[in-house]
Length: 356
Image (cartoon, rainbow, N blue to C red; front, side, top):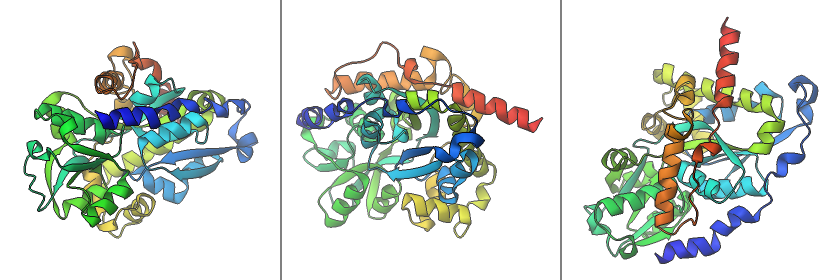
């Protein structure tokens, strides 16, 4: 596929062009109270509608760690991985597809948190009036998707499952804000994307399939996760544990009190502010995801289990598919080396101790 060769030539080399582990010069962390005021961390995030956006809006990470936290919004998981490789961020949100690509390219990162099980939160939508009623109708049409994202991966999986040669579809590399603009102008006929843009295009589009349906049909699931530069994590262990605690608390708050997360609530307002979503769309968008508990995160369903763990197997399957499409050149023998459940385990242990 020409689009993939172009991606290889232009985008992927940038992942490895940066200096790995630029945060490695940070001194070993003393107790948080002693040194945290002197520490700064840059966290890369996307526009996904997830519970921890409320913690972002209310400064919970700063309160829990004492660090100065700079949030940098990036347009795609591929951009997050490049920023992590260059050292311009230390932690970031990325889907399983860009994480698999980054690990395959040698980026020194660890997946330490499952942000969400994507389920139906990403979908392939055709514009009303485009003449597209099935996936097979995408032949010759323009489809916008962020390259090397989970949506990109499932676009290709869905096309293959429907017997459609991807080279017959005009697949355009567009970030979510660019998809929204192109949709408004009528420049694209379809898109595979997540909220808040997904909620927008649904208003005048037809859902052809979702990531939950693709996963059920093909067995190739996707997720969003948090990754960290390994050297930064080693030098700042207390920060990473406390950060995980904030993430876990945010998800538990949503899981246990969904009725409270209604339009007009501070939680929904905070999520809307940080994600760029319409407040009215937030409750429905959140409901599309599944947010694993600390115990589920550490289990073999997700981060635990070594080579047989769910995250490691998903990353390997994703990498195999990306290689078959020419998007990456190398598939690692073991993706569990890039999956680290220890931070979740430590956070769970601390939570248990505090409860006692």
